[in-house]
Figure (cartoon, rainbow, N blue to C red):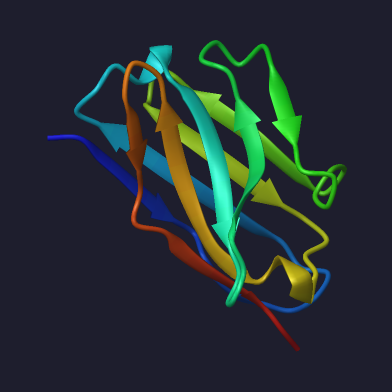
Length: 115
C-alpha cells in the first residue's frame, strides 16, 4: 500500500521556523522526484520546493528561496522541508508529492503563520 505521511505542521509566529517531514512507504522512494506543494485558502496548489531522486537537483519557488530548504534521506524514505523566517503568506496546507513512474500525494499538513 502506497503511503505518504506528512507531519510537522502547526501554528507559528511570523519569523519562526517549522520542519515538515514526509515518510514514504509502498514504493521505491529512491527513484522518485519529491516535491512539496502548498495550497492557501482560495488559491490553487503551488510548487514550493522539489528535489530529484538522487538529491542532485533542487528547485524552489521564488517566494521561498533563501528561507526554505528541502532535503531527503533515501535510506529512510523521508523528505523534509525546513522552513525559516516564516511569513503569514506561508499559511497553507502543505502536501508531499512523489513523481516517477507513477504519482502519489500525501494528505497534507496545515501550517499557520500568525501572531
